[in-house]
Length: 160
Image (cartoon, rainbow, N blue to C red; front, side):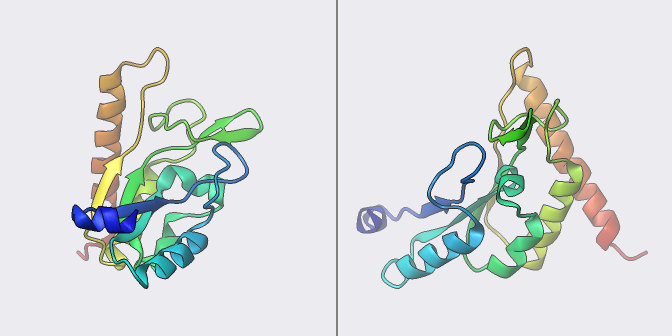
């Protein structure tokens, strides 16, 4: 697979998921993802980690964990986990919808961590409208949370 991707100058991303709540996939916490990436990088350099803010609560992680794993982080998803009854779901609701766990403070912490590791890769939102929600609302809320988080981050880091 890596040889095929290299032939087309393509980069492979390994995304961590939960094992306990919703997706229950093989690759769990970021530490495991790092070990796999380091092993693959011994023969192929075109692999990195995709870390998803919405998976963090289900993995018992927070954005500050990126400080230890910056050398493997290649892409960031910004989204929410949803609390449903006694569990959590990787449904990517819009921020501030009923049950959404992540909030503007999560995004501020993410921006802080990304700056500290000198991250220069892609950052994308992974949200989807819920039933009865207009798609434009999900887009507008995502834009709003990013702008608000960035401004609050600047306020924290700017010396007056």
